[in-house]
Length: 445
Image (cartoon, rainbow, N blue to C red):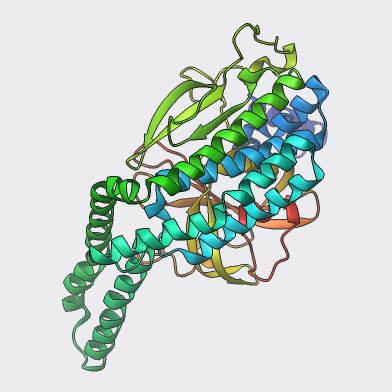
């Protein structure tokens, strides 16, 4: 319809100006069509950017809670930090084997926990007692003892490294001989057609190796989980007791501020705590996740939810809810990158930080990357790939440069929908020497 109207206008212009040649008419029509196509293309690109994160125009949950409930930013941050500590200690106590042979990752988590615990000195009496309890229980020593004991168990069962490291070494063991063989055959002037079957075999080997390593790893975890718990029951119960103290501390503060408890939802990996209301369960890679909110004390009616916070009343996982925040965020850690080109990385699932990542993305401006994914990550292959939670290799369809508050730039990679139906988003620094803002270190480092 727009095109037809455009043509009518130009026909009238031609008549009024007595332009009668077909060549002139064709030229003008072609130019108009190009203009319209360009406008449509621009509109589609803008629509794609708007669609990438539909929630961009919405206020972050933290800001909405602050404005509607009248609680300070510091109080919300305090709750988030305590929930982070609770989630980490709970996860560590339930799945200690996930941390074996990962010294750098464990050290990073421990540092975050100790930094947040140290800040409790500036809080009220309850927070100071919480800090004393953390120190009296000697939880840092317990964390490293549990990790060391789990590594001894793994070593006795023939597991000498983490699956990620083992896969990298196996990939190198396959790739180097392949390159040497291809070079040798090329030097001997062997017809390239005879190389195709060989290349196909070598391309399939990493997939078989990955399946074998992961199958062996998950089998080891399944058969060893009870053994880890039995041999370290006392230490694990000390960790869980402190998690219980943390959760009760958070609940008491929320009740004091009359915050509707049904708005605060979080994920844990066990059902060993009191005063929690179970909302749902989900199995992720063989590990059960429990979705909770806090339970009201007996005799206290639920606090009413302000009208502008009704959208947060129902859990994100509830069927039928529209436009729920993305959760499958993968961050490229242990990065080697320079001038926007990523040489190597370790993909790390940041599902526990999904809400914070969503908030950062909502506060960012996006622009199309001048380089395609193959230029940004030239070594992307089965040997160095990003995987969906279902185990499939993620296929990146779009590369965006995100600018957070005009201060900090990073990559946002959007993947095609996986065979399992999941949408995966990947974020990464553009250069490993980039100075990360303090508030974002938890995400990127």
